[in-house]
Amino acid sequence: MIDIGRYIAAGVRGHSAYHVPPGEPAVKLDAMENPYRLPLEVRDRWLHALRDVALNRYPAPGEYERLKERLARTFDLPPTARVLLGNGSDEILQSMFLATSPEVTVVAPTPTFVMYEQIAALLGRRFVGVPLSPDFRLDVEALKTALTRHAPALVFLAYPNNPTGTLYERAEVEALLALEDALIVVDEAYYPFARASVIDRLGAHPQLLVVRTFSKQGLAGLRFGWLAGDAAWIDEIDKVRLPYNVSTLAVATAEFALDYQDVFEAQAQRIRDERERLYEALARRVTVWPSAANFLLFRVGDRARAADVLAVLKERGIWVKDLSAQSPALAGCLRVTVGTPEENSAFLAALSQAL
Ligand SMILES: Cc1ncc(COP(=O)(O)O)c(C=O)c1O
Image 1 (cartoon, rainbow, N blue to C red):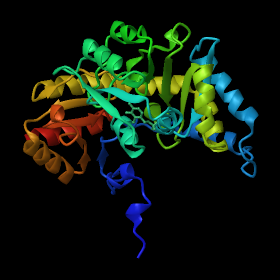
Image 2: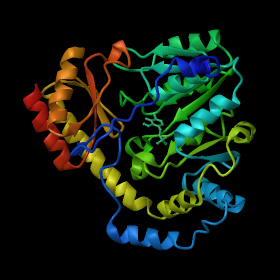
Image 3: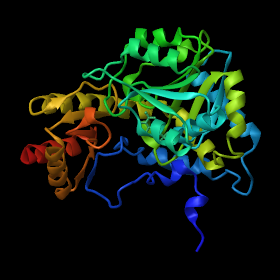
C-alpha cells in the first residue's frame, strides 16, 4: 500500500476540506448570498446575450482586456491601476499567496474571513492574526507593531469584515497604508452593502491592492472576482493565474451584469433596509453588532447555547452559521445573512422560539 502521507504536503494533510453542508433548506441564510434573482425579463436578455458566446473557443485575450477596461471605467480606477480577473475572489486570494515568497508573513486582524488563514495553512505559509478589540474594532497600534516585526508582510483587511460586519475607520486603514514595508490587500467583497471603498487611494499607494467580487451583489454562482492595483504587482500575480481561468460564459455574464448595475443596486438597497430592521429586532433579544455588510453577527450565550439555537432553527428549515468554533472571540455567536423580508421574519420567529 502506498503511503499517501509521504506525498501530500503537511499543510494539506493537517487540514480538512472546506465544508459546504449538503441539503436545501427552506430559508438559506448561512452564506451571505443575495436572496433575489434577476427579474425574468433581464434573465431572458442574459440568455440572449449568451447565445453568441463562442463556446468552441478558449477565452480570447481581447475579451479579458475589454472586461478589464469596462471594470476600470465603471469603478473609476486611477489610470495607473491594472486589473486581474479571477474565478471568484477566493482564487485571486490564492494567487496572491502563490505569487508571494514564503518569507512573506501573512497578517490579518482576527477574527476575519477564514480563507486567509486556511490558504496560508494549506500552502505552509506563516499566518499571524492580530486580535480585534472586544467590540471588533481595528487595533492599529498592535497591527503596526506586528507589521514591523514581521516585515515583509502580506496583510488582508476585509472591509467590511466578515464575520463581524465591522467597517473599520477609514483613517485607520490609511494609517496602515502609510507603512512602507507591507503589501496591503483590502478585500471589498461586501462593497454593495457598505458603499465604502479605498479604490480612490490606489494611485497614491502603490503597495495597496483592492479585491472585489460579483458574488455578494447577486452572482455567487457565476464565480467572478477582480483585483486592482499597481501594474508592478498585478503583472507578477498574473504569472500564477492559470490561462483561461475565467470562462467565456463568466466574461459575457460579467459584462452583462455591468449593464444592469441599477438592478443590483435596487436589490442591495432592499437588503440594506432589511438589515436595519433585522438589527433592531435582534437588538431587542440578543447582543448584535452593527454591520456594513449583508449579514449580522449576534451572540446568544455560550457555545452550547449557540449549538442549541442552531439546532432549533435547523429543525424549522432555517440555516444560519455557528461561528463558535472559529475563534474564542466568537464563542456563542451566530451569523445570519439578510434575506427577503419573509425569510427574515421566519428567522426572527424561529429565533424567538429557540430563545
Ligand atoms: C471577505 C470575503 N472575501 C472574499 C470572499 C469570497 O468571495 P468569492 O465568492 O468571490 O470567492 C468572501 C466570501 O464569503 C468574503 O467574505
